[in-house]
Length: 408
Image (cartoon, rainbow, N blue to C red; front, side):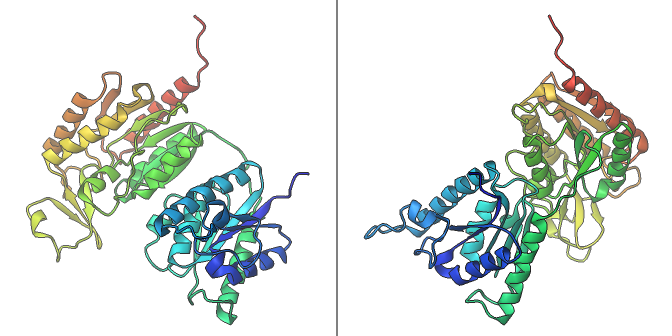
C-alpha cells in the first residue's frame, strides 16, 4: 500500500527528543502525516523513530568507541541517502528540524539534498550568526530559537509551534505559473542592473522567462545548480564579476568549482559577458582605503568600494575563465562590450581603463578554444544596443541547441 506523503521531522533526538516530539505532534494536529528521522550520534532516541540513523551507522554497538567526527560524517552520508530515497518515492512534503550548532550542521547538511521547492525549515540557536555556509544555495528557512533548546517551555514552545505551522503552510502551497515558458538563467549585480533589465525585457519579448541571479558568489552557484537540474534552456552569464571577487577575496566571493563549467549531458548553451570584470568589490570606504590600494582607480559607493584590477590581474582572470569555458566549446559563446563593463567603467567614469580591459580580452582570446566564438560589440554593457545583441545571440544559441538533428 502506497504511503501518504509526509513532513519529515529530522534531528538529533538523543539531545533534542522532547522538542522534536513536540514538532511531530503539532504537525500531526494540523492534519499532516510525519516521518521521524533520528540522526544523533551520542545515544538512542527517547521514542521510537520511523528511521534510526544512529543505530544503522553502528553508533549503538556496545563497547564500540565511535570517533565524533567520523560518526557525524557517517550520519550526514546515511541521512542524505535516506532522505533522497524517501523523496524519490514521493513521500516527502517538507522537512523540519531544531537544534544547536551540531544539530543545525547535521540537519541542514542532510536537507540540502532535496531540490528547490520542497519546504526546508530549521529552528536553530545559531540562526543569528553567519548562515552562508549553512544555507548555501538552497531554499532553507532559518528560524532563530531566541532561547536555547533545552526542553519545551512557554517561549520555545511558541517558536516551535509557529515553525510547525510554517512548514505545514509551505507544504500546502499549490501555486503554479499561468504559462510554462523556456527559462533563461541570467546573472546580474548592482553595477550592471540596467544591462540586466534591458536584456530581460528583450528576452521576454522573444517568449522566454528570465530568472535572475545576484552574482554574489552564492547566486552564481545557485544558477549552476539549477542548470544541472535541467531548469534552463540557456544561460546569459551577464555578470561574471564573481571571479574578480573570488580572486581578490572580495564581497561577492564564494564561487565553487562548478562555476562556468559545462553542464554535462544537459546541452545548455551559455553566453558569457565580462560584466563587472573591471573591478573587485572590497569592504572599505574613502576614509579607510588600505595602503595597498591607494594608487588604484577606486569607485566609492557605500560601505564597499570597487578597485580597478591591474592588467596582470586581468590576464590571470582571463586564463582562469578560459580554462573553465574550454570544457565544452560547442555550448559557449563570449560577447565583449568594448565601451565598458560596469557603470563605473565608461568614458569619464572612475574605473575606466581601456588598456587594462584590452589585456583581459587579448588573453582570453588567446587562451580560449578556437571553437569558441568571441565577438566584440561596440557599446557599453548598460546600453540597450548591447542588450539587443546579447538577446539575439542567446536566442540563436538556444534555437540551434533545440533544433532536431539533421538526417545524413
